[in-house]
Length: 327
Ligand code: HEM
Ligand SMILES: *[C@@H]1O[C@H](CO)[C@@H](O)[C@H](O)[C@H]1NC(C)=O
Ligand SMILES: *[C@@H]1O[C@H](CO)[C@@H](O)[C@H](O)[C@H]1NC(C)=O
Ligand SMILES: *[C@@H]1O[C@H](CO)[C@@H](O)[C@H](O)[C@H]1NC(C)=O
Ligand SMILES: *[C@@H]1O[C@H](CO)[C@@H](O)[C@H](O)[C@H]1NC(C)=O
Ligand SMILES: *[C@@H]1O[C@H](CO)[C@@H](O)[C@H](O)[C@H]1NC(C)=O
Image (cartoon, rainbow, N blue to C red; front, side):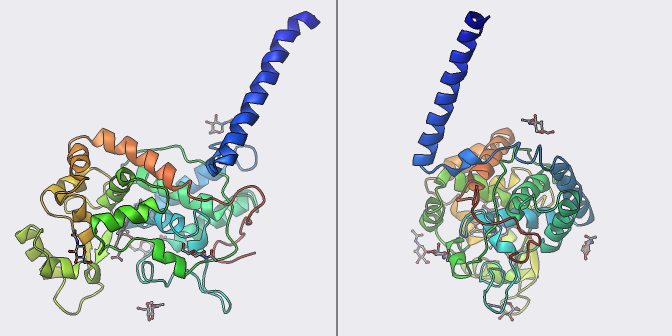
């Protein structure tokens, strides 16, 4: 009996040693995602993921642009102090939130949907599911609701107790050149290839005239009839908040045709066109333009990578009860 168990025990010990060695390695090299797991809420809130999916599906069915807005929230959360839900905090008399910072003011949307999700999961399991995790799940569910790929979200992030208004400088401006865009992503541990992949998110959603005006009036690497059609929406002065789709053909479907747009000089943002302007990323754009499957797979992988930027884990931060304010 004892003899028969011995090999099993030996294996078990060896396995544990290997596991802790791997843990140590990941800890030493600062790979916090080692602590995130797809099963994080299996025991503590098994209903969370289906509940979030339901609210997202309803919100997108009511207004398809909401899927784009929720997807963008992950980017604007993760690029400022990591994926910690800081973007969701409202201003207080003593702390300025990130919502009115230049990249977000009059632009970021979806906060009410996040509130609805939070209310739902709080009623299922109070104080368990973080706002930071809700953002990453809602981003994935939004892409799926718009016909895009599914990926497995890693969970276990906790919420910040501070916002960082000036930290929004880390979110790249749409007026940057390719090299500036690449540096902004490199600052967050993301490659030029991740950048080209993640910018594919612009296959859905809208942008304001004030953002694309200089491109349609002053730039010459733009399809002339496309520029003319945009000038009808966006006058040389006034109409700052008039909207145009980021993707010319299918702004409510998550697909790969924005890469075709770039190849036809129909990127609406200065930054979108940078990825196809005779530089190092042209080949990747061409590749995605005729391989929707490669784009779909890479997009999920890159979203997971972005969602791993400096999460708060263990006992850091808190689980906010209301995503808009610190407990
Ligand atoms: C290269 C870096 C990026 C730049 C410079 C950039 C810039 C912008 C700008 C200027 C807008 C329009 C804002 C407005 O007019 O109010 C926008 C919209 C959007 N961005 Fe990005 N973005 C970048 C990367 C990303 C990434 C990584 C994602 C997500 C993975 C993303 C998702 C979106 C979505 C979905 C919208 C539409 C939102 C809506 O309709 O509510 N963007 N982006
Ligand atoms: C956690 O739950 C998901 C969804 O129900 C399931 O697919 C997965 O196998 C579970 N994982 C564990 C470790 O129980
Ligand atoms: C549905 O979408 C409209 C905008 O199209 C918005 O005003 C309204 O609040 C949304 N309703 C719900 C329940 O999300
Ligand atoms: C945000 O936008 C509002 C309305 O357009 C404007 O009044 C306000 O000054 C802006 N806030 C900041 C911090 O720029
Ligand atoms: C805010 O973000 C900036 C830019 O990344 C960073 O240097 C600074 O340390 C952050 N501040 C806080 C309080 O986290
Ligand atoms: C980059 O952008 C600046 C304006 O911000 C422009 O003057 C410069 O020519 C651009 N450089 C390249 C290589 O496109």
